[in-house]
Length: 290
Image (cartoon, rainbow, N blue to C red):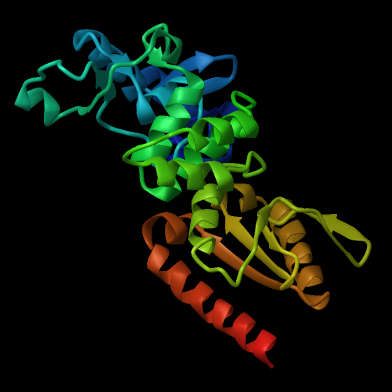
């Protein structure tokens, strides 16, 4: 996998070590030389499209917002946006050909919601929560919480006061957002699991079994179900693969049901994930009834 695709899978922004784990150091150097990836901070990289998004906001005399703003703040997202997200005043007229190649949003933003031409961190999360599909919005909110850029309490308080379009959706994102999620891959998987009321999962909960403690990506302690978001890059060497097999075996022996889903299944074939979880939820329901 080349470094650009690796970074895209990581959410559009990421650390060098994570990009290298999914590709290689040589491929990262090549991407930097070709400017398909740019360095945006100490050890942090982003897709080069982010620079184009900033220019688009300036050209429109607008504010970088939504997914583009999330990338600006260094938050990995489910799918890095190809077209810039820009918010302009409500009465601003934007040509049709420009709207066709940009994600234009209309709002009269107060000064407190703008930081150097970008929506503030809290405003960015709330905007995404109001407008984006649940899994995409959850990935943004999780990333913001994980980075420490916003607090859960302020997100809950802000969304509680919302009215109008997207307010219920935003409150749902705020309730479910959890900074313990390691990456957008895990966030999107959790969004699918949350569709099943029989399952109650939390990210990265410690599970101790046979003298060993593990942190599965998602844990349903009541039903003893561990769900793993399996990224190829983290299982590429023999030692890591062996350690992963030991964990899987010990959890299974201790009575845990372990479900493992790949990035491609979660991101590109969620119907398969849902079919599996539907069967598991049916089994859980039957066990309770019996």
